[in-house]
Image 1 (cartoon, one colour):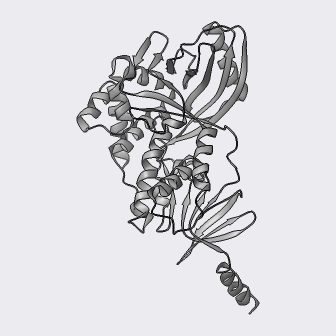
Image 2 (image 1 turned 45 degrees about the vertical axis):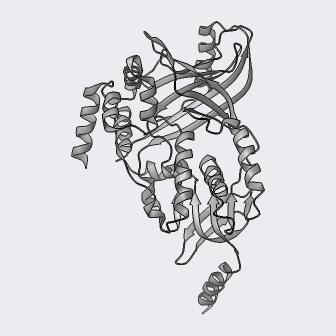
Image 3 (image 1 turned 90 degrees about the horizontal axis):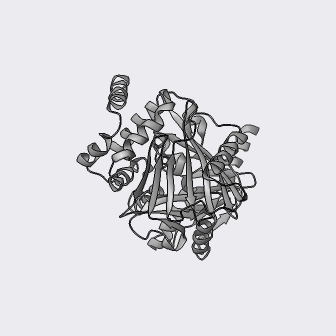
Length: 396
């Protein structure tokens, strides 16, 4: 009898909670971009939206970069580059990026701009609370934080749960992990209009390792020591590599203005299988990160536009995701790097040594025809990808 009363009280208490049409669990890039698209569409003014995150987004916690031939978010771009270096131990190729430019957006600039837009909407509420749990009931969803419980019609989740991927072996999980220094040097060693996408001349040590350099002037740049591999390194190893690279460039005196670090999941795991009628996973939690490169900004722009449009016409989140050929291309590359992580330098070197840069970017943006796909893929080591393809065919 007592248990029945408690159960009835708990069920009844949910109807006394604050109810929203949409609750976003997490307010990172994908969530803020999706809410922004909902706002600019003008189609959600009558629907209540709650955003929950323990992080207030008041610091410059990351830097996003993307290539683009338009003026996407031009007001937020901190720096643009028209050229880029690709390097390894034997190759130095300076690439014209036309018709693209490579763009940098600082995290704090993005947060401030998007949150300013959102704050003007009376139907949107932001709460700085850590999400502990959410679940879907028959007629609604329940979200619990450290401080409160809420109900809603639909949950849009961007909190990544790595254990989902780690608990299986069919889809490999690599990590794009890095530490970056924003430095100001005494010597003028940087070329301000030329970024360095990948410099594989650094010691590989059995992994895929490269230096990534974004100069903002002749004396200032962001340098990131980056790996595509399974395991993280001690912090000191990243920083020693950056210092060694600076010395190689001829820098004898530099000031570290700011530091950043990141760890981006690289996997083709089908996160969308965990979507339900009224709950969807987005961002890294939904497989929105480009699995073969770790790039997120451009993919998120596309996916958030598509999701905002989807919300106006469809009712079942399980219908949102569609698997395509690019997912399979990425899977083959990750299969190779999972088995032979030291081959990353040779694969990317083969691609950029003589490849058409504009076509490579178009391919990585998932906008190429099948014939264009072949022109890019054919630059890569054929034996590796044929073997990976055969392994995948026989494992299905």
